[in-house]
Image (cartoon, rainbow, N blue to C red; front, side):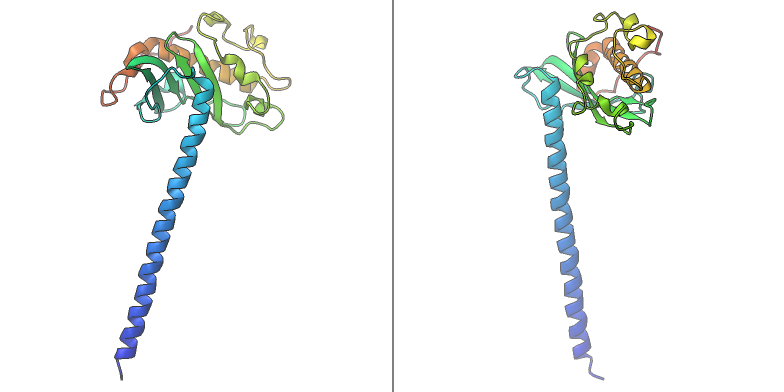
Length: 217
């Protein structure tokens, strides 16, 4: 039995296999890089809508810490982006989770300026009912835009509720649970930032701040 043709065939098949794996690996890396680039562009766009223009000189998407404050921010761990200008704090942007949405958790992006007011709030993801709860999307209504400029003193913290509950914020016709949950989550985010203060701007290598127990406000 001649072994040379068998060895040659094995070599050819092995070469094809190695080449195929290499091509798949290169393609996978290229796709991952493109996805990461698209995700970064999307976040940069959202940041631009909730932060003061031209008032920062750092890259908030790289200047981040991870905090543990489930009682305030709705998740075991929450990403915090720091916005600075010449090392002076400008704002923090947080990704709180609203655990009690009507159809499941809602992920938010909340910008809190250094003076304690909101630079803006946007929805990152949700599963709310189309035509009702999905009005939290800026593409569906202006409701989420009304948080800009609000703070724990505007309106007073006891008025941080929907109008149906005696508060200052509108709800949707036929859908109160969703706006009620978001108003509460944004208020808790403001409370967290108020209580942590400049500790949120400590070097990223420092231990993430742990908040005091949540109190009624």
